[in-house]
Image (cartoon, rainbow, N blue to C red; front, side, top):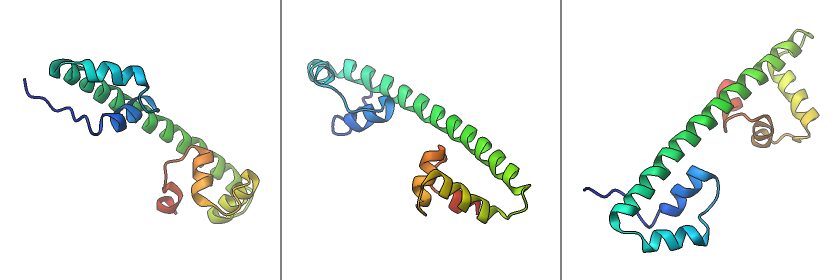
Length: 116
């Protein structure tokens, strides 16, 4: 069997897969595992991380659709996109912090910079 696991980054992979760093019981299992068992754990974490990434992308796309619908509805009030987003930022209490505003809206990092 070809082993692809890496003990030096398994904590990072665990965080990507589950949202948190491994607990002591994980480390006890990992340290006592054979190479085959570690590969099995690693492969399951990879699958979970891929699933978590897919879920995050779906949630971000939903947030984008919702956000753009809100912007479009406000544009009908007779203002431009930049002014509309500025008003939304003020209403959200973002105080000019674009990254914070994106976070509060569930938008992917850099979305408003790219979207213009």
